[in-house]
Structure formats: C-alpha cells, structure tokens
Image 1: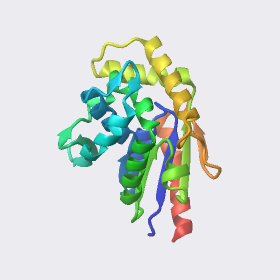
Image 2: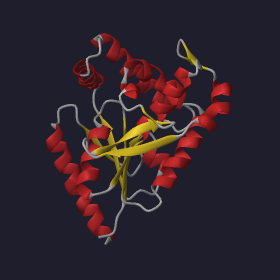
Image 3: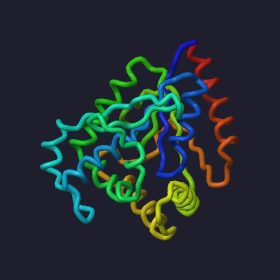
Length: 231
C-alpha cells in the first residue's frame, strides 16, 4: 500500500502528540514530534543563558545554532522515540513549565525555524510519516495528503496540561497553566514567520468534549480512506 504524509497541526495541549503517536503506531509510520525539537532548542538557549525574563538573545542564539544537534532515538520500552540534545536524553526536561514558558519566544525566531523546518522536510522525503506541530500542513509539508488541525477551548487544554504536570510530580497552579496556554496561543497565531493557522485543505477536529479513543478511531478511519485513494 502506498504511503502518505500526515500533517497534524493545532494549538498547544490539544493532544496532537498523543494522536500522532497512536496513528503512526497503527499505520506503522514514522512519528516526528516537532514541538520536541523547538523545546530542545529552547532548553539549549536557557542553559546557555540566552533567555532571561522571557527575552531571547537572538543574535547569539543564531550564532550558536550550529552547536545544536537534535536526534530522535527510539525507546522500545516506551514505544516511541525520545528527544536527544547533543547526545543527551532531554525528553523529560523539555516538558517542564520553565521550557513551556519560553518555547514560543524561541520558536518565533526565523533562524530557528529555518534550521528545524529543513530537518523536518528531510525526515519526510520518503513519506510514511506522521508529523505534528504548528506549521506542518502550511509550511513543512504543504502538499501532505492528509492534514488535520486540532483545537479545543483554552480552559479544557489548561486542565489537561495541569493534570499532566501534576502526574509528573511538578508543583503547578492551574491559573498559571491557563495563562501560559493563552499566551502561547497568541504568540503562535500572531508571529510573522509561519504563524499557526489551519491550512485550507485541513480537517478540523475540536476535541473539547471528545474522548481520545473516539477521536482516534475517527481520524484513523479517515486516514485509511485517504491512503486507499492513493493506491
């Protein structure tokens, strides 16, 4: 059966990564979490002292991007690939609130996006890939055979993120999470370079009140129909 490219875009904490992982596993496709890539660059910038009070030293970070090596390494026990930054597994650290608070400010930078988009496009040359992020269907793979746009109310997404961080043992406040979600929405949607938007040919899924299993089944079945048309 011919393989296709599946692009999943949408707002933060809409379950893009969860859906993409499930879909890739079911279809036996490669899964790429582009958000992890931007988070890893953000972590690099923070460690280098290039992010302070939400402000990024753009010029220095651009100069140091050549020192950033990103790699996904498959973890057979977890069933998915984890993010490695310069040979170090940073999967857990990039999911913390400090990184979440700064990732949009780093991801908006032209030099960062140019570097990561090139890496992402190289990963999808042979198709058979499920990639999620903010600009996959509009910039990275504008010709993807299947484009999905995920959305949900900020409040529902904040609750999901809050529970996720609590389960990881982090000391967080719901109101802080909601503020972060709303701030990221604004920055992602209003940046000049590759703003978050629904591609004209993307299918929109609002999962504010939709269960994960029901959502997955609907999208999986639709994916099969798209794949069959390409045979």
